[in-house]
Length: 252
Ligand code: 13P
Figure 1 (cartoon, protein in one colour):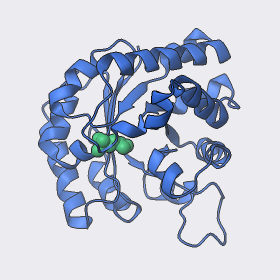
Figure 2 (figure 1 turned 180 degrees about the vertical axis):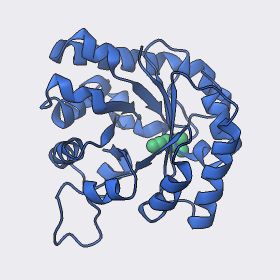
Figure 3 (figure 1 turned 135 degrees about the vertical axis):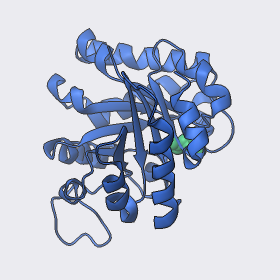
Figure 4 (figure 1 turned 90 degrees about the vertical axis):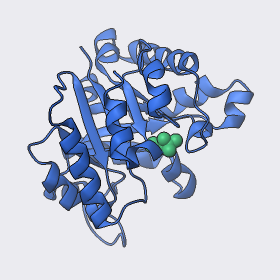
């Protein structure tokens, strides 16, 4: 049975005190809850990863980075490698977020390299993709999503997919208050599972968790998460508040 996942992408929010207190509150609120098939992940900024990872150690909360560089080490001012992430207790990395693609010029080719570097270092990858509004209006959303997944991930062997989580984040729904309808999310997630089946096999496709991201809140999560092919969410704004975030975990 595939895992259900609620992952909080804190983006460029929360200083060290706010980060520590947010993770502490989430851990406390989850303490009495039996999570069985559900994973809870938080992704603070680089500078707060070590502290948050050490607070989350031996709890129900896992810690992810929001990005990493593809090279092992060297003259890449301002960048952070997979090994560095591992050395501070991080086991998961988000790659391909639309904000990285849009504002930092991350192309499909760069992302494929990042995916390889992460997997070589035994990091699990939450791989993001999604169409912009224009693509959807012109009915190109399936094509765009297929090409992002194909270029970023389809070079991998089937066995590598056990360390991949997919996150469909339509750009028009990120931070806008506008969500894809549960039907739109389900339609895209089913399409994604189909292209993974066609490329690999149904075992790979049925095992991979596919998260939806874009203005998920406690008020709409239940309906979205109840869709057959939606295995949870990658959450921005609502992940910055412990009550809201834990309410999302409780929406399964
Ligand atoms: P919002 O939940 O704020 O729309 O952000 C979604 C997102 O980008 C998560 O990575």
